[in-house]
Amino acid sequence: MTMYSCGITPYDASHLGHAAVFLSFDLLSRALMQEGYKVKWVRNITDVDDSILGKARSLGVHYLDLAASEIARFDRDVTALGLLAPQVEPRATSAISDILLMIQRIIDAGYGYQSGGAVYFDQSKYADFGEISHLDRKEMLAIASERGGNVEDPNKKDPLDFVLWQPSLEDEPFWDSRFGPGRPGWHIECSALAMRELGVDKIDIHGGGYDLLFPHHECEAAQSKVVTGHDFVDVWMHVGMVYLGGEKMSKSLGNLVFIGDLLADYDAGIVRASLMENHYRSHWEWNEEMLKHATERINLWRSVTSAKVDNGVSIEVCTALANDLDAPSALAIIDDAARANFDVTRAAALLGIVL
Image (cartoon, rainbow, N blue to C red; front, side, top):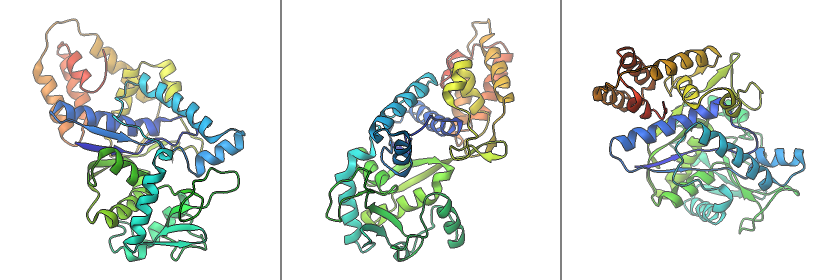
């Protein structure tokens, strides 16, 4: 089973919104392996883009030094949370030659054009643009303007065209290319990395947070299809947003709960259980009561004194996970077994919770 999930841009600490995404793919990987699949999972690191370059500039540090420190912090957090590691975690900067080759193939296919020192994807020529997100043009323009789409770029033929290669600013890293010195756009890295690392031009499962549906995954699907001649992904998986105070948890708003802070005060199993109370596709609001409830739940599971093990519980948990990763039902199944005084250690382990 080939799987690609979008990873971090390492310019700040990871928060609960990120944790919900990473935990969902951790759970998916566990469920697939439990069903007998051999999973090859790639999760990228976007170590060059506007966000990390801007943060490095404001701190007065080299962007790769910033990336190194934040990747180390991320690794500590996800290890403490008990997340499975992907088989490969490549950086965008490792794929410049692959990216440039793919850009040339897009141009050769008639979907790319050069303007103002940059290379753009001409989405007006791509009839299926919008097939992933199911948004109309007005909705696309509104979201693109919020998420770095630079819809007012005068070098574009159309506001929804997206950048494949861009000239670097004076203090930004650059790579030489036939299109001029510059750096890659955001979307192109994932297509290039997925094909390189997985060794295929069609992926079984691909996804990330719901906020990546558009423009990131829409653009990724389009540029990949014009190169390969077929759909790039069989199943798209998008994880719902986590809210705090009525707003989506995000670095730009500052309404964040950091993974590291929670793990300093709570057991990893408690944090995992609190995140799994909501189905991965749902949008939900974080509150401290979730930790209280999860603490009571894990204490219940650990309170079982009987040596009785009901293998049927583990089967029921696997069945729940096979039903679109229904973790809330899996948690309830284990609750019922623990109340009946069955040892639920094995069932909890299927959710990555160590008792």
